[in-house]
Amino acid sequence: MKKFFTLFVAVLLSSGAFAQSDWKDLVVNGDMEGAADPLWSSFWCHDYRKDVEFDPESGQQYDGGGQFQGFAEIVEDPADPSNHCARVIIRSDEEAIEAGNRVEVNGGLASWDCQFFIYATQTIPEGMEVKMTLKVKAEKAGHFETQAHYAPGDYNHYQLFGNVDYGTEWKEVSATAIVDGNHTQNANGKYFQSVAFNLSTMTDGNVIYFDDVKLEIREQEKPHEFSEWLNIVRNGVKSKDEMTFGNGTFTTFTGRDGVPGIDQPARIVTDPLGVEPVLSVSSVAATYMRENKDEEGNVTGTTPMYVVREGNLNSGVNVGDSVELTNWQSQFFVAHKHVFHTGQKVKFAIDARADHPTDIETQIHRGPGDYLHWDLFGNLSLTEEWQHFEFEQDITADQNGGSTVAFNLNVYKDADNTYYFKNIEFSCNEADASEEERTIASEDVVLPVAPSKEEADATHTSVSLKGAKDALLLDDVIGLISDDNMKLQTADGTLSEEFYTPEVGFYLKMDGSANGEAGDFIVEVAEDEENEDAAVFTVYNLKGYKLSDQVKSRLAFDQKGWLYVMNLTLCNDDEYLGISNAETAVKNGAVYDLSGRKVVNPVKGIYIQNGKKFVVK
Image 1: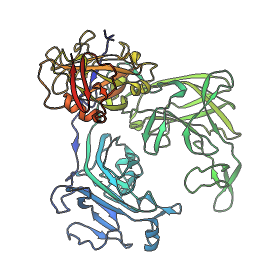
Image 2: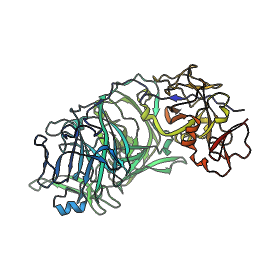
Image 3: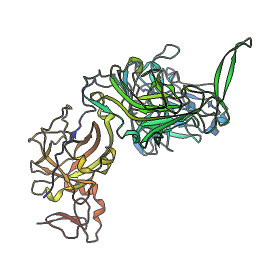
Image 4: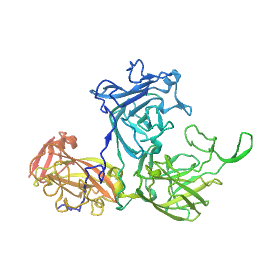
């Protein structure tokens, strides 16, 4: 007899748990399948194509260095001539040097030597939420940077959606950002209207393709009434959740130790004043004081300087170089997956101390090192003993779009200093966090549907829940499918137990949505007695007919507000064999169950032998 656990599941059918204004797309011909006239397009390019015939009304041209500036080239997809896409040819560093018009930065090829632009149909004001979706592939794998421009080439801000990785096969990309004052207006008073992709991020050139591009905007949602706190720090000082921001991928705790001056996971050490693990980041002392003089040679003050001892602070700075020692030479970052909106509540708590007593500054960044505003919680005065600090406040307009607390640790410059941190909480209102922000990971799962209750036991499928268990930081799968960790969520986001009973399971309709007893399917989930990291999923059809089409739904395991999503595909037995168990078609006489496991002594049920199903009654 199966052992059932009370399982509350989330059938997630919307992008969040609350309503928002609809997205408005600001591009024309995003699928690249429109009219051949390039004027009927939202895509511009700066590359080095030759012999282009210009449309006299388009404004296309070659600049003085031979760079083509005009509409992106629409071509046939090399892998599928029936599909069209935009193509950009990126020259190599060697070709740029030979041409004599190489765009340089710090002695190297600038990433903006070749660019691709999404040119929106309107300017995008401050405070809007903007979403970019597209498909991208290239002849060689790499990445490109994203910036905010007014018109293509009219630079506004160095960072918008962060870096985008691509490979040699089509990859779907989706990224969102909140437009702030840095993005919306440049020195000429022009407002953000174009996303720039800096493509020259490798020295040997490339050819990159883009398709199915959208640039959508909507108004930010208003802060919700407070429900409960959602804490980003899910595993204490050992938290290593990864978050991608404009400067790269970071862990929850990132440290910029002063000596190497590079961002890396903050060190976990044993507390010198105790036995527990704590986080540690180091700062550096000033090497000497540089005298500042006016035009007449009078000393007007001094600036602390630091001689680099190890590694690089950034490109073009090497060991032995002298650099100005700023307060942010050393930093400690606590990164949040949620992007804050004006008026949202945040709570932060931390225990901290330092080897040398000093103040440290707090700032808010978009991601580690991506500065947004100079002040978040003010200064913390540290001593050699542990102190507890706690803050609770609303995000201001100046802090809108931030997601990371940054501590400037190099306020103290008299000696090398070491800082220690523990008991960190960084929380937002759970109702303000979208499903996407709360989703730790996801996976695809295919499940066979039995035609009837009688055949359900024979068609159950064992599904590994190890990924969900590990991502949600649980010790066992039984804990994962217990009352404490699972919730049922209806299509409108309402938490309810209406569609689930432990004796029966949960009901699902043909469109994949949750339903009561009038549903089309029953899905049972139980402990797998043969595999402690798996659960048995049994799906059967209440209406008694065989599935003609696949049914897709999403099932979310909920652990303290964090989600692990299973993208479910329900299909008939024949499809299931083709999708999940192609390897069982080997004609070796062995017998397998419908999960592809070899069976020595078949009992009552449906099995596979030599690629064909048979029934043991």
